[in-house]
Image 1 (cartoon, rainbow, N blue to C red):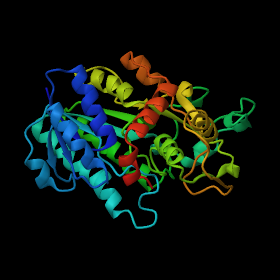
Image 2 (image 1 turned 90 degrees about the vertical axis):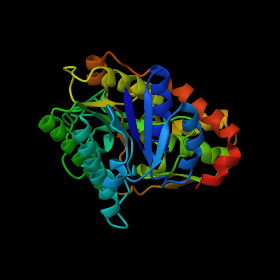
Image 3 (image 1 turned 45 degrees about the horizontal axis):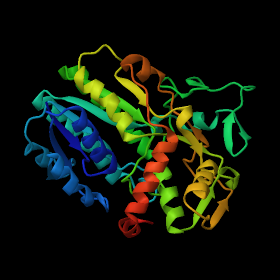
Image 4 (image 1 turned 180 degrees about the vertical axis):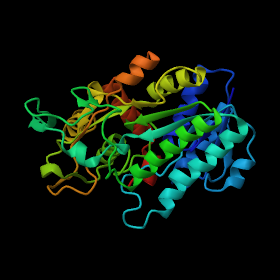
Length: 354
């Protein structure tokens, strides 16, 4: 099997390349990356040792894809992945990367007769509906208030695929939702196997965390480097909650999808860590205080920013039932592995830290 991974030098793309190769000894790996993000070039050498042939190219340019060999599958990990993208500078670059690039990739799939696994986002879900989830502060996090009705598609397990995708979802979320629709339409029109995985936060060692993405890694790195951190929004107490999934667990799901192109499973599923792998910022601070060292300066900004949400936990029950899959790596192990990597690569981390 020949697999092309887009965005292969990014954290998610490179981690999935290693994890999938470990599961498929005979897997032929190709990759394409525009190396736009600082730090992505550090993954070139490890990918070379893995036997992955990496092309420096941009999905926005059809000519860059035309030079690549025929593939059996494409795993699309390329995107501008921040919910704040396009807000201050216009959406043309965002649309170019997240939608036009996907359309060019779909054309390659059509020509090659290749299947596509597209990594989408939990940000396709309606912000207004997410903000309507009844919550109550308890301890150092928000928890579900069972005494009030919740929006459709939400339960104690979290947000399911039936949750509203009504606007607003952010400009970023809109590009990911549009890319999903086009991928599914291409699959239907040309008989291509297409799987869409709506991912929550993906976190692990080697991630260059930023404040607008990779929040778990970002928080641990800033703490380790003694740089200031802030609780922003929702009263400034750090009670907002997200779940995370480790790349190795996501790879286990993708592996099943690659092996079963004609499976009767739903074409769109959530893939996240769920309640057991969820944590508030205040709880993450407690982990850092215990395992990293004294706290840096912690600011508090009560005002909530546009697009921020107080609670997102992924309900992956559909993927679990359809693919006999469930995340395995405990939350504490993922956090500990991020910290171990950070300590071992402190000099490198300092170069790219915000």
